[in-house]
Length: 218
Image (tube, rainbow, N blue to C red; front, top):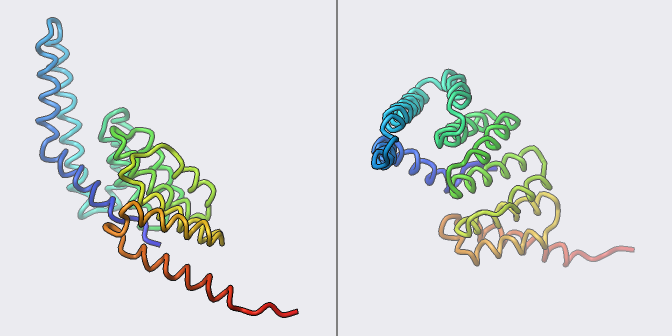
């Protein structure tokens, strides 16, 4: 089952945005504090600290392109040293992707949990939650996956949530619930990001019709 779908583009966009604008945003925040009496020292130290974290994050991402093994080791260290920053969640997402690529579902799940708990925005939290649900499906933790998807998430992720719920129900043999979830995903404009949705729904309808047509022998 594909673990990373269209939300991967959202993560890449966020990472790119921070790479290009992170320093400017951080500087703007710090300069805002400068307008208050007594915050000049805070501004200088905080700005220096945040800029250092931003530079380290960008260096980490650049190194990951050529050396995946070293990236995993350095990423775990980076997360530990920068807990509480927005980069903690983004790095955990990237590290979880590497673990998932190697089918190391347990470590992927652990990093996605970190990403969720440290998410700087509802969007990042939703992306990490969708990925966590898919990893839980891979581990056949179907009820846990449904529980993850039941958490409050932005409405803009409704289609993806319902599609994953449909996949989960289907694997549990709950075809009617799967059909309802796929239809809900389509109703939420899911076909725009996941064209396979219609095929999933059609295949499920065909399977149900075939089963209904089989005569019951005594």
